Length: 523
Figure 1 (cartoon, one colour):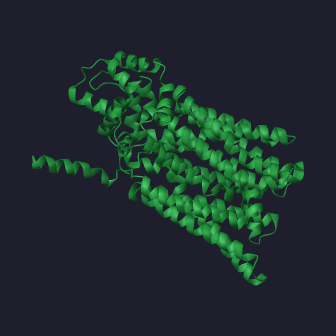
Figure 2 (cartoon, one colour):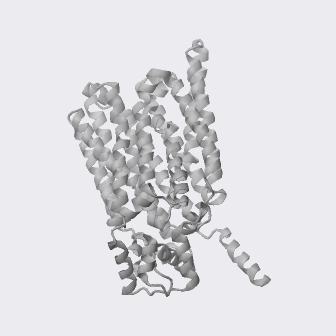
Figure 3 (cartoon, one colour):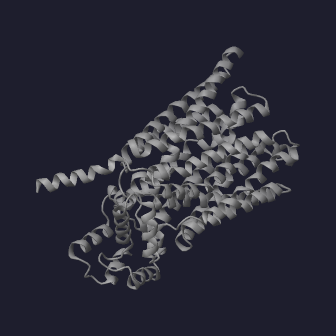
């Protein structure tokens, strides 16, 4: 018995040798994450476009503030719709739909003759933002093998930051055009990539978990065989998915399996029951998952990172860079920091874990926000020579804040929230988390200028620093480590619910129960 125990330990330790990255799964993750480039571009391009559209359309700071931040509120509708669409059409076609929405939004914004139609274009683009935010991490998490899930699931945030950098580059590149053309060119360039992305996504396979939910077991097995590190892992992943979906162990992959899943879908609680379980009558483990996931999404945006992205030219102006062209050029440093520091978390996610990255990132953000606020506050009280030095400190602190966010909380929050929910709740729970994330982003970006006028820019960053410090405490006490666990095992970190117990009973007593009993347990 001791020998077998030793063998079991050896088998358990073997995955720590880190098999090579599965190239097929990596290619799928890359394609799925491309929509995030458009997401980042749509957000950051507004930082420069607002300077020119204000002059061209004769609109006020309040209108600019609403136009800049409202895309995040609009994206709430997109993220909620994506939760339904991804279960109905599948993960892959939901990404195609997101690309089409981005294309339409970019055209509407670039060709808008007035503020009203510009707002319509912003609404359409916001729907696309919500779709991309929700679906890319979910798809990547469901395709990726356990050994590289953290690495691959961070891709959407990597491409999001690359899109932010491209938005800043576009601002700088078109800044010298006539005022009435510059901001339009910035938006219209964003209509080109969705055309290619929509076609490229069609080359991807569908998520194996969605295929099993539809009773397409053989198709799911083929995808898993391509995206797993070994045939044994592929079969193990398939067994875990079937167990969670509600297919009893030992049932064949023939028509009776498809019938079971179809019956599960027809019972009417496929969506209604999920929303009820999430929002009305959640079990204790589900409440803990929601607290962890929603809390993390709140912290990510309540610390004001999108304000820095959206209004960086104004912050640079406050720090002493007065020229419009120079401030746009300096803003590219924000995009560069987000792009170049995110590989740190991407490479370390599956080596040191999620918690260390989140805690290091959150602590750094609180420190640098406090430094930024203090230096901006002191600039008004010092002579010009000292003010220049404080301006340099402000710029360094802002870039360090962005680097801290990009190397931890930015990408890790999306990875973490894509892997803590059980399959039956994952799409809808991810949609809720994305919706909260966008609400907070909209609330901060739509209030930043007004808040700064009321309590000064320094006061605004002091507020964000306090939120970051409180967020660090939350992450320390409420977020368990998920590294190295399968998606099905990760949910057990938050406790067992009724479904887990039912499945355990089925495995102990064999597959003799009728399918209807299994289905009722899943509901």
